[in-house]
Picture (tube, rainbow, N blue to C red):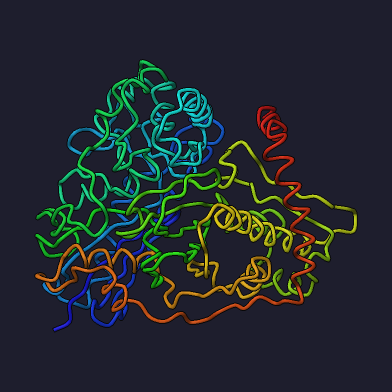
Length: 538
């Protein structure tokens, strides 16, 4: 009798469930459900309450309702007795303030109209002032934790977001019993147990096995209001692939899952994609490409330098130091372009891509900066914004579009170069995500990186990674695996395609990259206040 594990993958706009045969890797059931409220930027739903600049909120009920729906759909062809485990991955750092029973504050009448009580999505960047002050004080005090994050804390992370709430809505902060990573909230809803996943705690929560969390003394020096913030964070920290609890009777009834089914500790969505692509060894750059791109690489050694977003021991897979970098907008940039400049097109990408593909590399006379949602790596500055140089009255839409695609590839090249320059060897590149189906885009990436890019066999690598963690959490005694390398080998398939770099394009892209890098450094390192001043004018 076949045994299955279930991966529950929460993205920025939807949730998907993937049911996998743990022996063959066959994808037995899959379901996807978009969030009804999607991402909330302008006003709280059903109110006239306008949100401040750089807010990006979501509705916690969407996570629950859509999660229940996709689980029920994905498992309907098999017996729940044959499902041995479930695991959750989630965009991070997505923060939910909750009460001791797990109820989100936004569900309470007294806080439902307060935006600070709502879910702050990972790309909520309104905590940049708090992040700036964290960085200033931590550098001044030479805090050891800062070295694990290249010396820069992002506005996307837990501490700045919690402090932002304390600064602007102290009643919400005081009423919050726990600030949870959204993945941990889903696990709590599944099991009734509070855990904190080591992946999000490490990469987004400033926690490490070696140092613990930032000290109470440091928090008090930041602001006495958050002196006891650590009391509002779960201390039961568990890595993915370890048991966080078991499906509760209530949740079993709502989904069709069997009560007592093992639930793995959560993990970050992108990090889950590494095993889901079939990667279980070091020195491979994994690209998880969607609305944003996450760059992940494992190494046997610890290298502390400026340029990555975080390094965590066992943060991706056990036995390695896991390094993370990222671009805050990639697919988002392309979506912005077609929505803004091609609103009447029924198939905008099918229309614009062939035209852009006919253009020679660098032949459009344009260079763009891929900072439409700030820069995560290597500059870690949410105040930076997008830019296009070289426009003239003859510039065509396809030239702009190609420049935007090239800019995102150049952003990845900056990240990869920073690793190599600092001793983290990268031998190959693998990729997964919705963007990898675009041959035009992936060939540009291969040409600019001058590295082959292997494409994962599954379109659901992130959800598959969670299913792998679920099989490991269940363990061999329950029909799963005790060794994650064996689980990866059994549950993934060979890469389906490799994009080889075109050497004829190397010279053109090398020359264009020089312009990109000078522009990158001028606006990102030497004069970052220019873009910030434009933001302030708004």
